[in-house]
Length: 59
Ligand SMILES: [Zn+2]
Image (tube, rainbow, N blue to C red):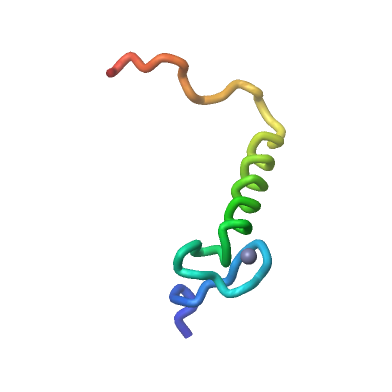
């Protein structure tokens, strides 16, 4: 019924996630997902110019 509650499934290895590393099952999968996300983000086709500004005027 309510699929938004516990337990979650690790998106990396499909194992039951733990509360400590939710929504992943372990720190390993957490790092793996983060790395994959970063890689996919950096390898995204598009303009190489980053949206971030080097200097912040309001600070
Ligand atoms: Zn996992």
